[in-house]
Every structure is written in C-alpha cells, then in structure tokens.
Image: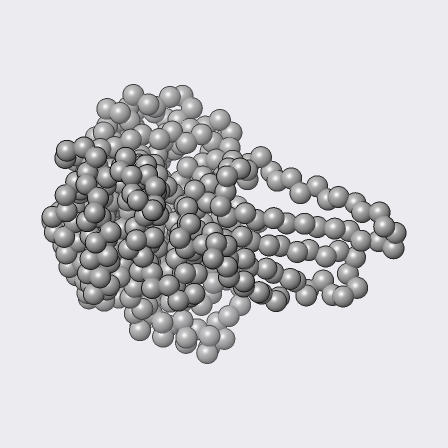
Amino acid sequence: MAISLHNSTNISRVGFASPFLGSNSASKVSISVSLPSFSNLSFKSVETSSQQLYRISAMSKAESSSSDQVKVDISLSPRVNSVKPSKTVAITDHATALAQAGVPVIRLAAGEPDFDTPAIIAEAGINAIREGYTRYSPNAGTLELRTAICHKLKEENGISYTPDQIVVSNGAKQSILQAVLAVCSPGDEVIIPAPYWVSYPEMARLADATPVILPTLISDNFLLDPELLESNITEKSRLLILCSPSNPTGSVYPKKLLEKIAEIVAKHPRLLVLSDEIYEHIIYAPAAHTNFASLPGMWERTLTVNGFSKAFAMTGWRLGYIAGPKNFIAACNKIQSQSTSGASSIAQKAGVAALGLGYAGGEVVSTMVKAFRERRDFLVKSFGELEGVKISEPQGAFYLFIDFSSYYGIEVEGFGKIENSESLCRYLLDKGQVALVPGDAFGDDSCIRISYAASLTTLQASFERIKKALISLRPAVPV
C-alpha cells in the first residue's frame, strides 16, 4: 500500500492507494482522509454528524469494457450507524500524528501506562516464541491460564470459579462487548453511571439495547446514588455496569455502598451486573477494592471482567478475561468462537507469568502504583491551586477528572468562545500543546480527563503549559 502525505496551512490529506487488487483488477478502490490542521482541530470530528471535520470519502467503481458504470450500494447497517467512534482513540491518534509531524504535543489522552511490560513477563512471551508456542490456542483460553485466573480470583477476591467459567479474550474490551451481546436482547436497558468509559453506551447499542445513563456528582466523588439507581430500574432493565476503580474519575466504590447497590439489585431477577475491574490493582490506600461477585447473593448474577493491560503494563499484548456463571460464560465463548477465536498463545504465556508475580502483582506492580500515586498527588495539589477548578481526588486508576466549567462562556481573542469541554480541550491543545479528553466523551461535559500515565517530569511540564494557557482566562462565574 502506498501512502502519501500532503501538508498545507489548513488541511493535511492522507491518500491511500491499494496495490493488492493488481493492475488487471475489475475493481479499483481509492480512499482519501481529510484531517483538520493543528490550529483548526475540533474534537467534534469524532461524532457521526454532517459537520464532521474528519471527512472520509470512499469511491468504488466497477469498470468494464464499455463506458457504463455501476454504482455500488455503500450504505451501512443501522446498528453501526447508531454507534459513535471512540473519542479517546480519535484524540490519541490525532495527537500522535501531530507529534510525528514535529509538533511538541504532550499527550495525556490515552489510558495506557508509560511503563514497559515487566521483564519477567516479556521474557515469558519471548520464550513462548522460541519454544514454538505459536499456534492457535483453545477458544476459551489455555487451561494453564484459566486455572491461574481461577487461583487469582480465589486468593485475591474470595470468589470460586472453575476453568469452564472463564473465557480469555483479546483484551477486557472484547470481554465486555461479548458479555453485553450475550445477555441483552433488543429493547433491554443497560444502566450506566456517568461519568462512564466511552465504550459502554456504544456496546449497548451494538446489542440493540438502550443505554440508561445515571448522572453522579463530583461532590459525591462521582459515586452512584443507590436511590437514583432504584428509581430507574424497570422491567426492561437487564444489565448494570459498574467500574471500580473508575475510568475516567478514579473513584473507588466503598464496600458499604456496593452492599447497598447489591440489596437493590437482588430485588430484580432480570438484572445482572457487569463489574469492570481492570484497574483493580491500581488503587491508593486507604481505599480498598471489593469484588462485586463476592457480595451476598451476587455471584449468580455478576459477570466479572479483568485483564492484564493496566496493572501489568501489557496494553499491546491484548489480553483480558471474564468470569461468571457457566451459562453466561458459555454464551460469551460461543460469540468468541465465531469472531476472533482464542487469544494469542504468546500473550497467554505472558499472562501466566504476570499472575505468577504474587498477590496483587507483587513488588513489580506496587512499584508502578507508588509512581502513579506520586503523580496523582502532584497534579491534585497543582490544579487545586488554580482558580475556578473543582477536583475529586481519585482513589485509584491513573486519571484526574477535573471540573473546568467555570471557564466556559469566555471569549478568547483569536480563538473564539469556550463553550464546553470540547472547545476548552481544543483551546488547550492550540495554546498549550497538551492533548486531553473532553468530558462529554464520558457523559459529563463539565469536566476534562487528564491521564497521569506519564512521567512526573512530563506532568510538570504539561501543568505549566495548561496553567499558562489559562492564565489569561477568568472564571465566568464565582467558584
């Protein structure tokens, strides 16, 4: 495939020409992608609207010996059209492209540890290749890894599973999607507290289910109010998604609050719970993690999702898993068998090594968590000193979800009006060259997500850039 990149003052165009069809092919495909320039970036580009700033056009022509042309139907499934692209992925990709083009952008948008995969884990993957462990793996995952996962869940979370109640997938993201597809029917409702991970509502839509968004408050540390939950459960409610520690807020659900939620869930036979625990080990004392399935009466209705990407710095290895009652897990396994099949045999060997590091990942993980905590403390203190900022101190994960809404409504000379989280992020990228994620991607437009999965030096530099960009602004309302 040949790739060409043309720069102008306003538009960067990337053209792709595919050689795979051959010179005598009866069909030729050309695709052009128009990307907005750095100065004119708008994160609205990731929304499926007629005003997209990323304009992707595709043309397919069937050529024959005559001059007649047959137009190909390029319409898409209504299900796909209902889904929004991931804004975090789009912003991260754009920031990466800017950096590769020489723009000194600090990228704090991606949810990815900046640490290398621990050596002992990497060596296990390398050895798997050297020893020829490179063939297809069983669809649900190797027995070795599923057994290790069962041991982990028993020792660390106090819940018992057998290997046939585990499915290993290509990342926790796949595990979540398969769970939603397995248990939701058209018209079902999926209850999602906001702020939420960007993919939850879209996964519900892919299952022809309806996402029901329940807002939370920064004054409540973005934790779900049990009374609000109870008042929104209907006969259509099928799945409640909980994420603790949370992406994007870093909030951790206390055990007592989870027990109240469990009491409400227990009243509704159709209601299941998907507990996303991918940030389980990135937690800051005195906060403590509680597995939802370990609560009284919840094992039978809880699907626990976890993985290796965050705690073990294995994002590129693509390895996650789901645990739950056998009938639900068998359904997830069936979906996987007709889509990706088993996860990488190499990654699974590395996963076994990761779980062999000891309780909660042992010293290797605790060292990374210590660094995350130091970074969190720096940012909380620094942003807390800025005028017009509200912060809920995260208890886990590696994100700050900061309320900058007091800056909305300000007119900036040469830029325009800061109207929402998207325009403020665009302003900070334009003025400060720091890439952040607008809160509207997570269901809360008053905030911006900052990932502190970066070195302390990088975070110090990014804070100074943000501070400088905001210094000329004044809060529109007193805080």
